[in-house]
Length: 383
Ligand SMILES: NC(=O)c1ccc[n+]([C@@H]2O[C@H](COP(=O)([O-])OP(=O)(O)OC[C@H]3O[C@@H](n4cnc5c(N)ncnc54)[C@H](O)[C@@H]3O)[C@@H](O)[C@H]2O)c1
Image (cartoon, rainbow, N blue to C red; front, side, top):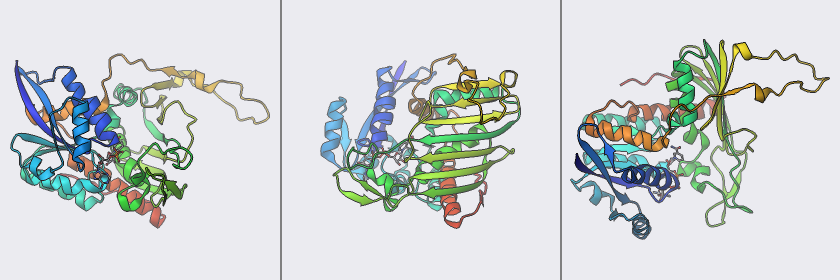
């Protein structure tokens, strides 16, 4: 076995996603398992170079994880020929510019979603990366969740017959920040800082729907800012200018209709923070982050509407749990592995900047649909 060290510039690793999911649960986890076996006698050894705005915070983070390399000078890191890959988990508003610089420096690019704040910018990134001949990938973690992998398995196995509809519920109560600290960063609630639930979540819904059920062909959304005032990380009140809830209806290629509610102003009466119910002619399923339950047509009860008598059946108990039948790795790590194999072993990979642009497009059209009060067609983006 030869060990090949690959240096990855990781920008935004002091943040929630950058630190927990990408640095700790993906890159450091890969090191803990001894690197990534490419299957051709090579083991990749990822060597992160922590990048950000505050040298001191980066130094402390590096020390905490026993890492050597960190810098607050992005251009210096990008001009280092030893660095192969640029990764971005910064706040959304800072992303496009940084990725442009990375592409110009000839680095492969892996990035969080949304890839840019508008469709034009997102498409331009895809064009630039293509022209520069660098490899590129965008985080689409939800399809790597155990619950959705089991759902995919059901679809591939023909469980549903003809799929009719998908209903998604995503959300939880995000505290305002006055009497209990908010559990999400305040920029998420300010439109001027790249916040908003549509910009955040519609890119996820685009690839989940597209990969599992069919490309989104139209969107109709109604957004709201249910909580107009919040308190930031310093306890200071601010105006929440971004949408904190979005009620969306999506038509999909092939005829499936999807409806997804996304909200940071909802209290959870569900088994998981996101759940999708899929109804088909032969059976139905409810998939969450980890679990998936099914009801086949042969086991479907026949309720009769009668409000005068109490519900005679425990409907939830009539569903069957889908077994894991395997082990599921962390979804972010699984996708990192595929991307690294794409870069270093030329493995196929389609979750690229163009796929990322489709997510940005859906968010943009979703917001426009809400502002204009109408359903909007989603033009297909092709290479
Ligand atoms: N894939 C997912 O499931 C998922 C989930 C949450 C967030 N995200 C995405 O990840 C990105 C980061 O989100 P987060 O929740 O980790 O945010 P965060 O606020 O916790 O972290 C943001 C990071 O960006 C850095 N940064 C750079 N420029 C900044 C600026 N001008 N202001 C503030 N911070 C700046 C911060 O130092 C920090 O490292 C966002 O683009 C978001 O859309 C993805």
